[in-house]
Amino acid sequence: MKLLVCCASGMSSSLLVQKMRDEVKRQQLNGIKIGSCSRDQLKKYIDEADVVLIAPQLHFFEQQINDLASQHHTRVINISMDDYGTLNVENIIYNALMDDTPIMEEEIEVSRIEALQAKLYPLAKKIAANRSLNSISRAFITTMPVTVIGSLLTLIKNLPIPLYSDYLTRTGLSSILDLGSSASIDIISLYTVFFISYHLVVSYDLSGHGAGLISLACFFLITGRSDNGYSTRFLGSNGLFAAIFIGLLCGYLYVFIIKRNWKIKLPANIPHQVLSSFEAIIPSFIIISVCLCITAIMKLTIYNDLHTMIYSTIQSNLMKFMGNNLLSYIFFQFVTNILWFFGLHGGNIVGAVTNPIYTPLALENLAAFQAGEAMPNIINSQFGKIFIHGGVGSMLSLSILMLLFSKSQKYRAFGKLSLPTCLFFINEPLLFGVPIVLNPIFLIPLLFVTPILAVITYFVTKIGLIPIVTGAQIPWTTPPIIFGLLQGSWRLALWEVITIILAAFLWYPFFAMADKQAFEEENNPCHN
Image 1 (cartoon, helix red, strand yellow):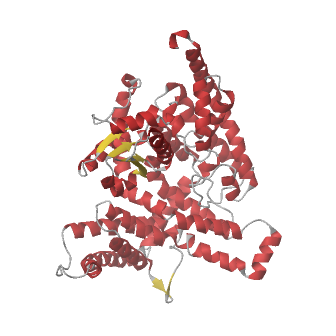
Image 2 (image 1 turned 90 degrees about the vertical axis):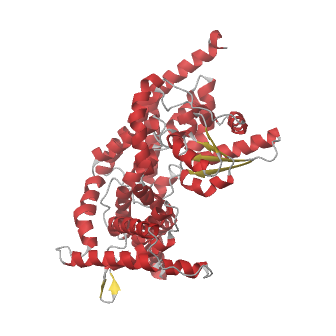
């Protein structure tokens, strides 16, 4: 039997899977294989599974997963919050091996929350299942290796050490390191437009490579040539919004055309590679023609090209508004935290909306840093990571409190379990084990800790106590202190330590209340 554990990004489920494999060996359950995947990978692996086990943060996708599983004759089971959070692999394996109907999530104060859930779940489903937002989000994730390498090479080249800088300039290594940025960050829009179309078309169960190539050609088409070359102005972060528009436009047009079978038909004995190339000719002609018409129309406007129009009217104004608007940032923080309180993956849902806005702001900072100019955007995609540690709610501080100050066995055990994972921003043991989710004791700190830290961090940055983050694209699992150093300053690393302590003070009253309650229950004879 093959068991497949599915969670939002595949990180927390990988920890669970390892413990499940150990348990299978201990019980000598021969013939059971266990794997994990993210929700995006489920289509790829579901046909190999006999049972799909859904992590709690994806329970609101149960119907969609059931519909997919029915096509492959695969059973679907919801992992309970308690079992997932405490890594109770014995229960999880037992339920997976049963032939009964899937287990149901335990009810926690349903009468108080069912009305809010009824309103939040449909909205969350619509956002999380939106093809356009998902395609944009997945495109940014897919291009991450390029942006991370480009960012690291930029940081290596710009280390604030005079002797080191002189050495790089004298030996010519400086210009070589510049190539890393020019081949990645400086042309990020090209990678983005390709993968937006690719992921959009793949979501319709079609091959996405042809659409990606067409969208790339259309992006060059609207960029235009001058002096026998392409201007690099809109190939980097300045062209990201145009890349999003072209990527979605080409992707949807490609699906529209292919679904209607508008393609050159050749004999079946033609090699597949040749057949695929000919089938893409008609879609390519139509889509490129549409983009040519758009380019011609833009020539008649004051903007002259689509890039300038989108950047002048939408991107630059939106980036200015979002880049230094603390209120809008706090609003998104609240929405993320509220969704997590109800067991929904707030980061993925809200990130689908905010990533296209905050990522260009970070890349704009990185370009300014590389050029030796002042970085313009205090708030960007890397801003929150200098004060949010251990995932939503900055729960690394909570795990430290549990480990060091718990009187109850329950919270001491959770401290030991969660501290190693929270260092790498995986806090599901706390969210679903304690649980934090649907727990009124922890509602206030979950909602307010990160917004409070955001306000403080914004103002200490504004007055110059700590520098603006460079916007270097660093993996989200990077532990604190290391993250601050990679953002180019020991002061940022020190600030991370300070915010961990501040978050601990904010969490402490609520932790102490819950710990006292748990301690009394453990020592009450009625509960023994």
